[in-house]
Length: 249
Image (cartoon, rainbow, N blue to C red; front, side, top):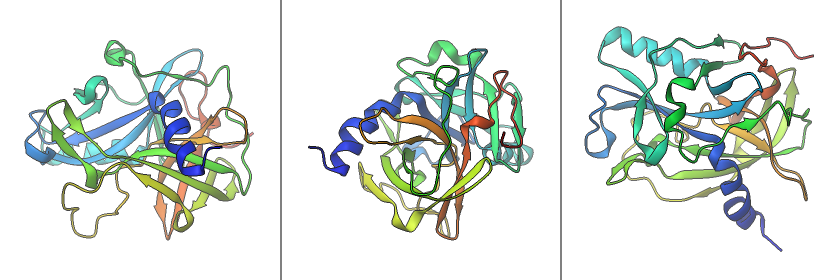
């Protein structure tokens, strides 16, 4: 029998890892020791709607890039795909974006050839089911405090989180983060900025519903944390063409 910790690390983690990655906002594509040129990082999920292959992240990640680019024209947004080498990903605007749901969708075709071993979760074949209070979720997050530059490229200490849904509100749902179970792959290798969130960098990460004796199912995306609660947007907000559905049906 697996303990929960063993199941998260040995079963669930590798199962969901191919559907996710890290997005960075950086002052330069020439990364320096420790990745100090990086302003911020977040997460993204990869989905196949049947009509399009999409990269999904938070609206506030795209907004942050635009704000920083307004201050410095050299700032770039990049995604870490094959071997963690960042690839510029700011040449196109989102397919759609919504500030309330805090979601932005992008056509990933410009960098599709660099996806390597990444996979696209088949939402067209496995639509995200409804969730309810008490359902258990699992996600992988690349916290900024673990960021480092390695010989292989940009490195992150991936953390596995397990949380239970505490409330559902249409296309939004929440989990009590203070009761989260987590497993850290490595300890911090850099000093976080003052007043920064210890879990900063997980926004946009896809989360998966974990049920007994069933494969994990993509259920939504982390959009942030507020007063001890993690906030999520349900994956059913994604239309086949990549546009965003604003209300639950």
